[in-house]
Length: 237
Length: 237
Image (cartoon, rainbow over the protein chains, first blue to last red):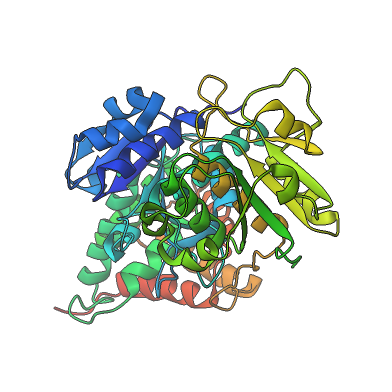
Protein backbone atom coordinates (compact mmCIF):
# COMPACT_ATOMS: atom_id res chain seq x y z
CA UNK A 1 0.00 0.00 0.00
CA UNK A 2 1.30 3.43 -1.03
CA UNK A 3 1.45 5.98 1.81
CA UNK A 4 -1.12 8.78 1.93
CA UNK A 5 1.02 10.90 4.25
CA UNK A 6 2.19 13.08 1.34
CA UNK A 7 -1.36 14.02 0.32
CA UNK A 8 -2.63 17.47 1.31
CA UNK A 9 -6.14 18.92 1.11
CA UNK A 10 -6.33 22.68 0.54
CA UNK A 11 -9.62 24.55 1.02
CA UNK A 12 -9.57 28.00 -0.59
CA UNK A 13 -11.61 30.70 1.16
CA UNK A 14 -14.21 28.35 2.73
CA UNK A 15 -17.16 30.40 3.95
CA UNK A 16 -18.89 27.94 6.29
CA UNK A 17 -16.82 26.59 9.20
CA UNK A 18 -19.10 23.55 9.37
CA UNK A 19 -17.73 22.50 5.98
CA UNK A 20 -14.17 22.71 7.29
CA UNK A 21 -15.08 20.28 10.06
CA UNK A 22 -16.96 17.97 7.72
CA UNK A 23 -13.99 18.00 5.33
CA UNK A 24 -11.66 17.05 8.21
CA UNK A 25 -13.93 14.13 9.08
CA UNK A 26 -14.08 13.02 5.44
CA UNK A 27 -10.28 13.12 5.27
CA UNK A 28 -9.81 11.11 8.44
CA UNK A 29 -12.12 8.33 7.32
CA UNK A 30 -9.73 7.79 4.41
CA UNK A 31 -6.47 8.20 6.27
CA UNK A 32 -5.61 11.76 5.20
CA UNK A 33 -4.28 14.20 7.80
CA UNK A 34 -2.72 17.28 6.15
CA UNK A 35 -5.38 20.02 5.93
CA UNK A 36 -4.60 23.58 4.82
CA UNK A 37 -6.97 26.54 4.81
CA UNK A 38 -6.38 29.53 2.55
CA UNK A 39 -7.97 32.70 3.94
CA UNK A 40 -10.95 31.00 5.66
CA UNK A 41 -13.86 33.36 6.32
CA UNK A 42 -14.38 32.20 9.90
CA UNK A 43 -11.79 30.08 11.67
CA UNK A 44 -11.57 28.63 14.24
CA UNK A 45 -15.26 28.21 14.99
CA UNK A 46 -17.32 25.80 17.11
CA UNK A 47 -19.35 24.55 14.11
CA UNK A 48 -16.15 23.15 12.63
CA UNK A 49 -15.51 21.16 15.79
CA UNK A 50 -19.06 19.81 15.91
CA UNK A 51 -18.87 18.48 12.37
CA UNK A 52 -15.32 17.16 12.65
CA UNK A 53 -16.66 14.51 15.08
CA UNK A 54 -13.69 12.27 15.86
CA UNK A 55 -11.41 14.09 13.41
CA UNK A 56 -10.60 16.90 15.84
CA UNK A 57 -6.91 16.03 15.47
CA UNK A 58 -7.04 16.74 11.72
CA UNK A 59 -8.91 20.01 12.33
CA UNK A 60 -6.57 21.16 15.07
CA UNK A 61 -3.51 20.20 13.06
CA UNK A 62 -4.66 22.26 10.06
CA UNK A 63 -2.61 25.28 8.96
CA UNK A 64 -3.84 28.61 7.66
CA UNK A 65 -2.16 30.29 4.68
CA UNK A 66 -2.59 33.72 3.17
CA UNK A 67 -2.41 32.46 -0.40
CA UNK A 68 -2.79 29.27 -2.41
CA UNK A 69 0.76 29.65 -3.71
CA UNK A 70 2.08 29.48 -0.16
CA UNK A 71 -0.04 26.43 0.65
CA UNK A 72 1.32 24.37 -2.25
CA UNK A 73 4.87 25.68 -2.72
CA UNK A 74 6.55 22.49 -1.45
CA UNK A 75 4.33 20.14 -3.49
CA UNK A 76 5.41 18.42 -6.70
CA UNK A 77 1.91 18.87 -8.12
CA UNK A 78 -1.41 20.48 -7.29
CA UNK A 79 -4.77 19.16 -8.49
CA UNK A 80 -7.58 21.72 -8.79
CA UNK A 81 -11.14 20.45 -8.35
CA UNK A 82 -13.74 21.97 -10.66
CA UNK A 83 -17.28 21.01 -11.53
CA UNK A 84 -17.49 23.32 -14.51
CA UNK A 85 -15.49 23.31 -17.70
CA UNK A 86 -12.98 26.12 -18.19
CA UNK A 87 -12.13 27.89 -21.38
CA UNK A 88 -8.51 27.31 -20.64
CA UNK A 89 -7.33 24.72 -18.20
CA UNK A 90 -4.37 22.55 -17.35
CA UNK A 91 -4.55 18.86 -18.12
CA UNK A 92 -8.02 17.53 -17.24
CA UNK A 93 -8.39 14.23 -15.36
CA UNK A 94 -11.28 12.46 -13.76
CA UNK A 95 -10.82 11.92 -10.03
CA UNK A 96 -9.99 8.22 -10.28
CA UNK A 97 -7.21 8.83 -12.78
CA UNK A 98 -6.01 11.84 -10.79
CA UNK A 99 -5.74 9.84 -7.57
CA UNK A 100 -3.57 7.20 -9.21
CA UNK A 101 -1.46 9.86 -10.93
CA UNK A 102 -0.97 11.81 -7.70
CA UNK A 103 0.23 8.81 -5.73
CA UNK A 104 2.63 7.83 -8.49
CA UNK A 105 4.45 11.16 -8.53
CA UNK A 106 6.70 10.38 -5.60
CA UNK A 107 6.36 13.62 -3.62
CA UNK A 108 3.91 15.83 -1.79
CA UNK A 109 0.71 16.52 -3.72
CA UNK A 110 -2.21 18.84 -3.02
CA UNK A 111 -5.90 18.58 -3.90
CA UNK A 112 -7.30 22.08 -4.04
CA UNK A 113 -10.97 22.98 -3.49
CA UNK A 114 -12.71 26.33 -4.04
CA UNK A 115 -15.49 28.11 -2.24
CA UNK A 116 -18.87 26.52 -1.61
CA UNK A 117 -20.66 28.89 -3.94
CA UNK A 118 -18.35 29.61 -6.83
CA UNK A 119 -15.48 27.13 -6.72
CA UNK A 120 -11.95 28.13 -7.62
CA UNK A 121 -11.06 31.37 -9.33
CA UNK A 122 -9.24 31.18 -12.64
CA UNK A 123 -5.89 32.25 -11.21
CA UNK A 124 -6.19 29.54 -8.57
CA UNK A 125 -6.81 26.90 -11.24
CA UNK A 126 -3.92 28.38 -13.16
CA UNK A 127 -1.58 27.85 -10.18
CA UNK A 128 -2.27 24.08 -10.32
CA UNK A 129 -0.90 21.49 -12.73
CA UNK A 130 -4.06 19.43 -13.17
CA UNK A 131 -7.78 20.10 -13.32
CA UNK A 132 -9.83 17.32 -11.75
CA UNK A 133 -13.51 16.66 -12.22
CA UNK A 134 -15.75 14.28 -10.36
CA UNK A 135 -17.87 12.52 -12.98
CA UNK A 136 -21.48 13.47 -12.24
CA UNK A 137 -24.96 14.12 -13.56
CA UNK A 138 -24.47 16.84 -16.20
CA UNK A 139 -27.62 18.67 -15.12
CA UNK A 140 -26.71 18.71 -11.42
CA UNK A 141 -22.98 18.29 -11.06
CA UNK A 142 -22.24 20.45 -8.02
CA UNK A 143 -21.32 18.38 -4.99
CA UNK A 144 -21.34 19.88 -1.53
CA UNK A 145 -17.76 20.83 -0.57
CA UNK A 146 -17.28 18.16 2.11
CA UNK A 147 -18.83 15.55 -0.16
CA UNK A 148 -16.40 16.43 -2.93
CA UNK A 149 -13.57 16.05 -0.39
CA UNK A 150 -15.06 12.67 0.59
CA UNK A 151 -15.07 11.34 -2.96
CA UNK A 152 -11.51 12.56 -3.61
CA UNK A 153 -10.27 11.09 -0.32
CA UNK A 154 -12.05 7.81 -1.07
CA UNK A 155 -10.45 7.54 -4.51
CA UNK A 156 -7.03 8.27 -2.99
CA UNK A 157 -7.58 5.53 -0.41
CA UNK A 158 -8.63 3.10 -3.14
CA UNK A 159 -5.66 4.08 -5.29
CA UNK A 160 -3.26 3.68 -2.38
CA UNK A 161 -4.29 0.06 -2.09
CA UNK A 162 -3.84 -0.73 -5.75
CA UNK A 163 -1.23 1.55 -7.29
CA UNK A 164 2.31 0.29 -7.25
CA UNK A 165 4.76 2.99 -6.22
CA UNK A 166 6.27 4.42 -9.39
CA UNK A 167 10.00 4.33 -9.64
CA UNK A 168 11.19 7.74 -10.72
CA UNK A 169 14.67 8.06 -12.03
CA UNK A 170 15.17 11.59 -10.77
CA UNK A 171 13.79 13.91 -8.17
CA UNK A 172 10.47 15.55 -9.05
CA UNK A 173 10.45 19.30 -9.65
CA UNK A 174 8.48 21.29 -7.08
CA UNK A 175 5.87 23.94 -7.85
CA UNK A 176 8.55 26.49 -7.00
CA UNK A 177 10.94 24.97 -9.56
CA UNK A 178 8.21 25.09 -12.19
CA UNK A 179 7.28 28.68 -11.42
CA UNK A 180 10.96 29.55 -11.85
CA UNK A 181 10.93 27.89 -15.27
CA UNK A 182 7.76 29.72 -16.35
CA UNK A 183 9.16 33.07 -15.22
CA UNK A 184 12.37 32.35 -17.11
CA UNK A 185 10.48 31.36 -20.26
CA UNK A 186 8.45 34.53 -20.06
CA UNK A 187 11.51 36.69 -19.57
CA UNK A 188 13.22 35.00 -22.52
CA UNK A 189 10.15 35.33 -24.71
CA UNK A 190 9.69 39.01 -23.92
CA UNK A 191 13.42 39.77 -24.06
CA UNK A 192 13.75 38.21 -27.50
CA UNK A 193 10.70 39.97 -28.91
CA UNK A 194 8.76 36.70 -29.30
CA UNK A 195 6.12 37.82 -26.82
CA UNK A 196 4.70 41.33 -26.60
CA UNK A 197 3.76 41.70 -22.93
CA UNK A 198 0.88 44.02 -23.92
CA UNK A 199 -0.62 41.67 -26.49
CA UNK A 200 -2.90 39.63 -24.24
CA UNK A 201 -1.35 36.55 -25.82
CA UNK A 202 -2.29 33.16 -24.36
CA UNK A 203 1.29 31.98 -24.69
CA UNK A 204 1.81 31.78 -20.92
CA UNK A 205 -1.23 29.54 -20.58
CA UNK A 206 -0.16 27.43 -23.51
CA UNK A 207 3.21 26.55 -22.09
CA UNK A 208 1.87 25.96 -18.62
CA UNK A 209 -0.58 23.51 -20.14
CA UNK A 210 2.24 21.96 -22.14
CA UNK A 211 4.77 21.60 -19.32
CA UNK A 212 2.22 20.53 -16.73
CA UNK A 213 1.77 17.31 -18.70
CA UNK A 214 5.43 16.46 -18.29
CA UNK A 215 5.91 15.65 -14.60
CA UNK A 216 9.30 17.30 -14.97
CA UNK A 217 12.24 16.27 -12.87
CA UNK A 218 14.31 18.94 -11.18
CA UNK A 219 17.33 18.13 -13.35
CA UNK A 220 15.21 18.55 -16.47
CA UNK A 221 14.11 21.99 -15.31
CA UNK A 222 17.79 22.83 -14.85
CA UNK A 223 18.61 21.62 -18.38
CA UNK A 224 15.82 23.72 -19.90
CA UNK A 225 16.86 26.79 -17.92
CA UNK A 226 20.50 26.20 -18.83
CA UNK A 227 19.57 26.19 -22.51
CA UNK A 228 17.53 29.37 -22.07
CA UNK A 229 20.48 31.07 -20.35
CA UNK A 230 22.81 30.07 -23.16
CA UNK A 231 20.39 31.31 -25.81
CA UNK A 232 19.91 34.61 -23.99
CA UNK A 233 23.63 35.14 -23.68
CA UNK A 234 25.54 33.11 -26.30
CA UNK A 235 29.26 32.52 -25.82
CA UNK A 236 31.48 34.24 -28.35
CA UNK A 237 32.64 31.87 -31.06
CA UNK B 1 -24.49 3.66 -20.36
CA UNK B 2 -26.54 1.44 -18.07
CA UNK B 3 -29.60 3.16 -16.65
CA UNK B 4 -29.59 4.22 -13.02
CA UNK B 5 -33.36 4.55 -12.92
CA UNK B 6 -33.71 1.16 -11.25
CA UNK B 7 -31.47 2.10 -8.32
CA UNK B 8 -33.12 3.03 -5.02
CA UNK B 9 -31.65 4.56 -1.88
CA UNK B 10 -33.30 3.55 1.41
CA UNK B 11 -32.57 5.45 4.63
CA UNK B 12 -33.64 3.51 7.72
CA UNK B 13 -34.81 5.59 10.70
CA UNK B 14 -32.75 8.72 9.90
CA UNK B 15 -32.73 11.01 12.95
CA UNK B 16 -31.56 14.32 11.41
CA UNK B 17 -33.70 15.75 8.60
CA UNK B 18 -30.67 17.68 7.33
CA UNK B 19 -29.10 14.34 6.43
CA UNK B 20 -32.15 13.39 4.38
CA UNK B 21 -31.77 16.58 2.35
CA UNK B 22 -28.02 16.13 1.96
CA UNK B 23 -28.58 12.53 0.84
CA UNK B 24 -31.08 13.74 -1.78
CA UNK B 25 -28.51 16.21 -3.08
CA UNK B 26 -25.79 13.53 -3.18
CA UNK B 27 -28.13 11.25 -5.14
CA UNK B 28 -29.07 13.91 -7.66
CA UNK B 29 -25.43 14.77 -8.44
CA UNK B 30 -25.03 11.18 -9.59
CA UNK B 31 -28.30 10.80 -11.43
CA UNK B 32 -30.25 8.83 -8.80
CA UNK B 33 -33.86 9.78 -8.07
CA UNK B 34 -35.63 7.05 -6.08
CA UNK B 35 -35.39 7.85 -2.35
CA UNK B 36 -37.25 5.89 0.34
CA UNK B 37 -37.41 6.71 4.05
CA UNK B 38 -38.19 4.01 6.60
CA UNK B 39 -39.74 5.47 9.76
CA UNK B 40 -37.89 8.80 9.69
CA UNK B 41 -37.76 10.57 13.06
CA UNK B 42 -38.76 13.97 11.68
CA UNK B 43 -40.16 14.34 8.19
CA UNK B 44 -40.88 16.55 6.38
CA UNK B 45 -38.75 19.31 7.88
CA UNK B 46 -37.29 22.59 6.61
CA UNK B 47 -33.68 21.51 7.33
CA UNK B 48 -34.09 18.75 4.75
CA UNK B 49 -35.12 21.32 2.15
CA UNK B 50 -32.21 23.63 2.96
CA UNK B 51 -29.66 20.89 2.49
CA UNK B 52 -31.30 19.37 -0.58
CA UNK B 53 -30.31 22.53 -2.50
CA UNK B 54 -31.37 21.90 -6.11
CA UNK B 55 -32.44 18.33 -5.38
CA UNK B 56 -35.84 19.34 -4.02
CA UNK B 57 -37.46 17.14 -6.66
CA UNK B 58 -35.72 14.05 -5.26
CA UNK B 59 -36.70 15.01 -1.73
CA UNK B 60 -40.31 15.74 -2.62
CA UNK B 61 -40.58 12.56 -4.66
CA UNK B 62 -39.37 10.42 -1.77
CA UNK B 63 -41.73 7.86 -0.20
CA UNK B 64 -42.09 6.91 3.43
CA UNK B 65 -42.43 3.26 4.50
CA UNK B 66 -43.22 1.68 7.84
CA UNK B 67 -40.65 -1.09 7.41
CA UNK B 68 -37.56 -1.92 5.41
CA UNK B 69 -39.27 -5.05 4.05
CA UNK B 70 -41.96 -2.87 2.51
CA UNK B 71 -39.39 -0.45 1.02
CA UNK B 72 -37.50 -3.18 -0.85
CA UNK B 73 -40.23 -5.69 -1.64
CA UNK B 74 -40.17 -5.04 -5.40
CA UNK B 75 -36.35 -5.14 -5.70
CA UNK B 76 -34.31 -8.04 -7.08
CA UNK B 77 -31.60 -7.40 -4.51
CA UNK B 78 -30.86 -5.16 -1.54
CA UNK B 79 -27.35 -4.04 -0.53
CA UNK B 80 -26.89 -3.17 3.15
CA UNK B 81 -24.19 -0.60 4.00
CA UNK B 82 -22.14 -1.26 7.09
CA UNK B 83 -18.91 0.17 8.43
CA UNK B 84 -18.43 -2.52 11.02
CA UNK B 85 -17.98 -6.25 10.64
CA UNK B 86 -20.91 -8.45 11.62
CA UNK B 87 -20.86 -11.73 13.37
CA UNK B 88 -23.15 -13.00 10.70
CA UNK B 89 -23.59 -11.31 7.40
CA UNK B 90 -24.63 -11.97 3.84
CA UNK B 91 -22.03 -11.90 1.10
CA UNK B 92 -19.61 -9.02 1.74
CA UNK B 93 -18.59 -6.74 -1.13
CA UNK B 94 -16.67 -3.51 -1.32
CA UNK B 95 -18.72 -0.65 -2.76
CA UNK B 96 -17.05 -0.66 -6.17
CA UNK B 97 -17.75 -4.34 -6.69
CA UNK B 98 -21.26 -3.93 -5.30
CA UNK B 99 -22.08 -1.11 -7.72
CA UNK B 100 -21.07 -3.20 -10.72
CA UNK B 101 -22.93 -6.22 -9.37
CA UNK B 102 -26.09 -4.22 -8.72
CA UNK B 103 -26.24 -2.77 -12.21
CA UNK B 104 -25.69 -6.18 -13.75
CA UNK B 105 -28.68 -7.78 -12.05
CA UNK B 106 -31.22 -6.42 -14.50
CA UNK B 107 -33.89 -5.26 -12.10
CA UNK B 108 -34.62 -2.83 -9.32
CA UNK B 109 -31.94 -2.76 -6.63
CA UNK B 110 -31.79 -0.96 -3.27
CA UNK B 111 -28.85 0.42 -1.29
CA UNK B 112 -29.85 0.48 2.36
CA UNK B 113 -28.37 2.81 5.00
CA UNK B 114 -28.85 2.75 8.78
CA UNK B 115 -29.10 5.44 11.40
CA UNK B 116 -26.43 8.10 11.85
CA UNK B 117 -25.38 6.78 15.24
CA UNK B 118 -25.65 3.01 15.13
CA UNK B 119 -26.09 1.96 11.50
CA UNK B 120 -28.38 -0.91 10.54
CA UNK B 121 -29.81 -3.37 13.02
CA UNK B 122 -29.04 -7.02 12.52
CA UNK B 123 -32.49 -7.91 11.25
CA UNK B 124 -32.24 -5.11 8.69
CA UNK B 125 -28.91 -6.48 7.42
CA UNK B 126 -30.51 -9.91 7.39
CA UNK B 127 -33.27 -8.64 5.09
CA UNK B 128 -30.66 -7.76 2.45
CA UNK B 129 -28.75 -10.04 0.09
CA UNK B 130 -25.38 -8.30 0.25
CA UNK B 131 -23.36 -6.46 2.87
CA UNK B 132 -21.41 -3.54 1.43
CA UNK B 133 -18.50 -1.78 3.02
CA UNK B 134 -16.79 1.41 1.95
CA UNK B 135 -13.04 0.80 2.22
CA UNK B 136 -11.75 3.24 4.84
CA UNK B 137 -9.23 4.01 7.56
CA UNK B 138 -9.60 1.11 10.02
CA UNK B 139 -9.25 3.41 13.02
CA UNK B 140 -11.89 5.90 11.81
CA UNK B 141 -14.17 4.19 9.36
CA UNK B 142 -17.50 5.85 10.09
CA UNK B 143 -18.59 8.16 7.29
CA UNK B 144 -21.30 10.72 7.80
CA UNK B 145 -24.59 9.33 6.41
CA UNK B 146 -24.88 11.71 3.45
CA UNK B 147 -21.20 11.20 2.64
CA UNK B 148 -21.68 7.44 2.55
CA UNK B 149 -24.63 7.98 0.19
CA UNK B 150 -22.35 10.21 -1.93
CA UNK B 151 -19.65 7.54 -2.30
CA UNK B 152 -22.19 4.83 -3.13
CA UNK B 153 -23.95 7.06 -5.67
CA UNK B 154 -20.60 8.02 -7.21
CA UNK B 155 -19.57 4.39 -7.62
CA UNK B 156 -22.92 3.58 -9.21
CA UNK B 157 -22.48 6.49 -11.63
CA UNK B 158 -18.96 5.29 -12.49
CA UNK B 159 -20.19 1.73 -12.94
CA UNK B 160 -22.92 2.90 -15.27
CA UNK B 161 -20.12 3.75 -17.63
CA UNK B 162 -20.95 7.33 -18.30
CA UNK B 163 -17.46 8.75 -18.27
CA UNK B 164 -16.88 10.38 -21.63
CA UNK B 165 -13.56 9.85 -23.34
CA UNK B 166 -11.25 12.80 -23.10
CA UNK B 167 -11.18 14.98 -26.17
CA UNK B 168 -7.89 16.32 -27.42
CA UNK B 169 -8.10 19.98 -28.20
CA UNK B 170 -5.53 20.16 -30.97
CA UNK B 171 -4.00 18.05 -33.69
CA UNK B 172 -1.25 15.71 -32.57
CA UNK B 173 2.28 16.43 -33.74
CA UNK B 174 3.72 13.93 -36.21
CA UNK B 175 7.08 12.22 -35.88
CA UNK B 176 8.30 14.62 -38.56
CA UNK B 177 7.21 17.61 -36.47
CA UNK B 178 9.05 16.18 -33.48
CA UNK B 179 12.24 15.45 -35.42
CA UNK B 180 12.15 19.04 -36.64
CA UNK B 181 11.89 20.24 -33.05
CA UNK B 182 14.80 18.03 -31.89
CA UNK B 183 17.01 19.21 -34.76
CA UNK B 184 16.12 22.81 -33.98
CA UNK B 185 16.88 22.34 -30.26
CA UNK B 186 20.24 20.79 -31.11
CA UNK B 187 21.15 23.58 -33.51
CA UNK B 188 20.18 26.19 -30.90
CA UNK B 189 22.10 24.41 -28.16
CA UNK B 190 25.24 24.08 -30.26
CA UNK B 191 24.93 27.59 -31.72
CA UNK B 192 24.62 29.17 -28.30
CA UNK B 193 27.55 27.24 -26.84
CA UNK B 194 25.29 25.28 -24.44
CA UNK B 195 26.22 22.00 -26.12
CA UNK B 196 29.65 21.03 -27.38
CA UNK B 197 28.97 18.64 -30.27
CA UNK B 198 32.20 16.75 -29.50
CA UNK B 199 31.43 16.20 -25.83
CA UNK B 200 29.42 12.99 -26.03
CA UNK B 201 26.78 14.72 -23.90
CA UNK B 202 23.53 12.86 -23.28
CA UNK B 203 21.55 16.06 -23.71
CA UNK B 204 19.91 14.87 -26.93
CA UNK B 205 18.64 11.74 -25.20
CA UNK B 206 17.48 13.74 -22.23
CA UNK B 207 15.24 16.05 -24.16
CA UNK B 208 13.89 13.29 -26.36
CA UNK B 209 12.92 11.46 -23.18
CA UNK B 210 11.44 14.66 -21.83
CA UNK B 211 9.40 15.67 -24.90
CA UNK B 212 8.30 12.14 -25.71
CA UNK B 213 6.26 12.16 -22.52
CA UNK B 214 4.28 15.15 -23.76
CA UNK B 215 2.11 13.93 -26.61
CA UNK B 216 2.74 17.34 -28.15
CA UNK B 217 0.24 19.00 -30.41
CA UNK B 218 1.42 20.49 -33.68
CA UNK B 219 0.65 24.01 -32.56
CA UNK B 220 2.71 23.49 -29.43
CA UNK B 221 5.71 22.41 -31.53
CA UNK B 222 5.27 25.61 -33.52
CA UNK B 223 5.21 27.71 -30.34
CA UNK B 224 8.41 26.10 -29.06
CA UNK B 225 10.17 26.56 -32.40
CA UNK B 226 8.96 30.14 -32.65
CA UNK B 227 10.50 30.88 -29.27
CA UNK B 228 13.77 29.23 -30.31
CA UNK B 229 13.86 31.33 -33.51
CA UNK B 230 13.30 34.52 -31.54
CA UNK B 231 16.02 33.62 -29.03
CA UNK B 232 18.48 32.80 -31.80
CA UNK B 233 17.79 36.06 -33.57
CA UNK B 234 16.35 38.66 -31.19
CA UNK B 235 14.63 41.68 -32.65
CA UNK B 236 16.45 44.96 -32.14
CA UNK B 237 15.01 46.90 -29.24
